[in-house]
Amino acid sequence: MQIKSLTVKDYRSYEDRKFEFAPTVNVIVGKNAQGKTNIIEAIFFMVIGKSFRTSHEKDVIRWKEENGYILGEFAKKYRDLDIEMFFNVSRKKAIKIDGVGIKRIGELLGSVNAVFFSPDELRLIKNSPEERRRFMNIILSQTNRSYFYLLGRYEKVLANRNKLLKTSRDINVLSETIDIWNRALSDLAEKIYKERAKLIEELSPFAKKAQEYLSGGKENIELVYKSSFNGEDYSKKMMKALEKNIEKDFKLGYTSVGVHRDEIDIFLNGVEVKSFGSQGQQRTVALSLKLAELEIIKNRVGEEPLLLLDDVFSELDRDRRKKLIKFTSKAQTIITCTDFDEPDIECNVIKL
Image 1: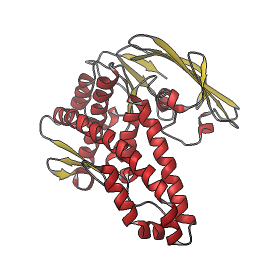
Image 2: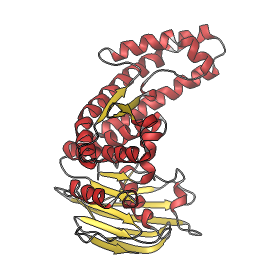
Image 3: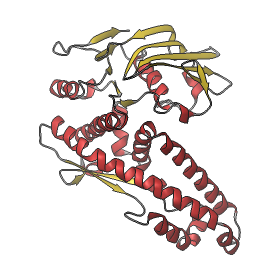
């Protein structure tokens, strides 16, 4: 899978520009605040339908303009396709695939696949479990569109149950009316749990391989998927817990168990990296997880996804830069950096 070109009009800092990419390694070189990340953002926007920098889509429109536009021309294993996105300051974005408009993000997911990494992805290791759930959700939604809709249904049922918990004044009446939401939530949670557990099982050996490679064989990574309930009969276990916790949830005003509270524990040489790993170790672990994501997507969709690396070289020494490029040599890679002096790396250099 490759991106052949990207056209941006009134998008972020760009008035009207087209970028063309080689099928191997592409390095975008520019000064800080010159628009390197804007290019990566636009590409990943067409992968997941959202920006990784803002939840306000009008922010991507160039200053003082009413509209913004991006076009990606992609080459897949068996076909080429174009993805267009139209932004407006007062309306939701519009998306077209090969000139045909789509109504839901779910119709976009899986059209093209990519893995994104930047120094900010350190939050995958250091921040709350929400970041690690998001990591799982992005992989699964890219490779299994039905998972995206499953997750959406779960979140809707969860919101309805939480609303009932917050607005009910009598716990006895609540107990009589909440059963329908308990059953729906438990059934959906079991399906999500199974998909995530399978993903972590597949992801672990690839993360282990990447970590050993990047650390020169000195570090061993272990991933442990922690859910409210493990093993068989997830739905039944959750149903019992929801019934048992009704008074607790009533007082809290939200649902205290379920896959919305899942976590991934990450250990490096037997030590929890979130709490006890150095920043260098945490950064390498985050990169290893992303390289493992690359392998998972390739295996699940049958072709290499794009690899988008935003300002990663500044965080790696020369040896690890070379190792990274060698490890990902089969995937089309787009790298942004402020300077590039790597004569041993063959690449297409784009200067801003």
